[in-house]
Image (cartoon, rainbow, N blue to C red; front, top):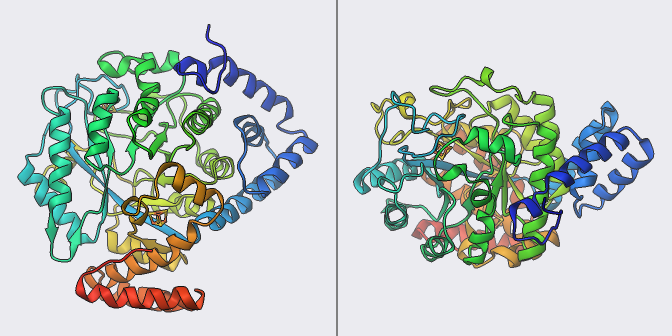
Length: 472
Ligand code: SF4
Ligand code: SF4
């Protein structure tokens, strides 16, 4: 059996089952020990992160007062690192053909009744134009794993198509990619295609359950899947996005596994995950959540979000429309920094109103509001909706990004860029009602900026009329 080794190049070394078990038994022992918990909270207050062992102790603590302290602290940490901006994005499903057998996903190869579709480049163009007309600038590409229908060449061609579409005043400025684990050589090709973040959810870090949940197809190889981020980083991709599908396995051990993965990437490559997503199992075609015994209650889910914020304060945290408005609102306060808005989880769901969306969707959407409604809602909560993609264009990625972020300096870029891109959104895409809310938010937020930043921002806002977006 592999020993735990943070620096190991083997999945079972850096995600070590023995270490997870030891962490959880220690956390159980000290979870309600007031002195230990106080010490860990004091460390969290320094806003420099927590180890997986420390975070696990807080996770297993049952004191309501401690929970309130964690929640307050998580909000403070988020504000210290990112300010009040919330980045918006949309998923774009290219194809739902898949050879894998994931038992929790309706795209699994054995599902014979789901509507299958792979978009042509012309259809992708129509989708992207529909997304641009909503105001989106940042996409997350999604595709099933299929060597014949969705080879890497198809993904690369699609990325090229997307970056190439300039429609009215719109353009997609960052394409994040969520596709199956692949080789170093293929990751190099993705990097050369100028992808933003490479996202790959681990689903579960428990090897035994992983193998049961993935009975067939290339994804059934736990080692290949778990070591994918190492290959991606070795290929030069500096921003990677982790995530587990909460509900597949015991949440406490998934939480520890996720933090161990982040610690491993940071130790070996000098940069932890750029983002962490927190999807929760939800109903879909052919998938009944009652078949899964580890469903995560809201309260624990929110605690996990808050503790991730304390443990890896520099990491962007993403919540999708799997969650409804109520949970998204609470999660935003606890540390979420990116959300999707106006999403469709079917192939071709944005452009073709008549498309049988539900029949090809990967999961049921809980938040069905339009992007305009989401933008207005965020502003009414006191957040600044942001369409910023500046770091990517200005080379602030990987270690460079992390070093700024860890010094709590990134919000100096985030805040003016959020206001700049919000103004761009309000002028080009917002309904009059949203524009009115936005203009008064802009005035309030600009008044809070240092004089010199405000002057630079005003100058850059004036350039928007010439369709020039000059980021900070
Ligand atoms: Fe295919 Fe991904 Fe769904 Fe698994 S989760 S069946 S790999 S699309
Ligand atoms: Fe994200 Fe960088 Fe823009 Fe901040 S400045 S919102 S970190 S791209």
